[in-house]
Image (cartoon, rainbow, N blue to C red; front, side):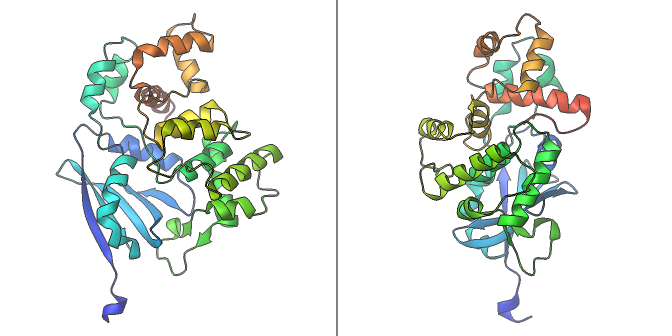
Length: 307
């Protein structure tokens, strides 16, 4: 094979401190995978990626013998393999000591059974905060499945197809902020106000007013800027802080599943203010409590619910 046609790829190991619940991580990602951009197949997380202008395909799996995930990057993006180790470790929450969190939170009798059932549960991150906000805004007041369908339509309207891509499930690039701000979203399956909120957000990111994917940005400033946009409320901001900005204490207090889970445990805690007060004892790990409560429902229902 001529040298210029040889496939380029790189493999990197992403170590973690056990336990790590890889199957539940995959269930969460798979239930929310953006059609055409990412997929979970045969125990592997796959997606199209771009890094510093170079495109490629990412495949992440669990090592069969060692305490690490294995990331394979195909295409030109593979030249950035070393730089990708840190963001991928954050995306899969590999730097967290789950045993320390469990020791702190399992003192609460509400939580001890949840940590016993899923001791290696992590908070799934996101490849892109912009992508996650889009997904979250689309998902307002609709189910996970409906949101996934609409985001897939957004990709086809405003994304870019990767020509000659060998893997159909990851053959699209997610829309850029500029592209999403400019595209016609008529009859996409969302109310007009939500479309306006989505495109206003995309415009703000494109103009640099809300740098959601800037690793150097202050989280408090990002929270304030995102919350200041029309159509984006506290739930969205906390969910994004929890997953994309890696705030271990983020708490999407108004999430209906979380509220119901708390009321199940204490029917007197009907008011949001009372629930917030009860959640104070879970600091500074409230995001992990949210994941365990969502996971309890997902285990019970046998499907991806919550978030």
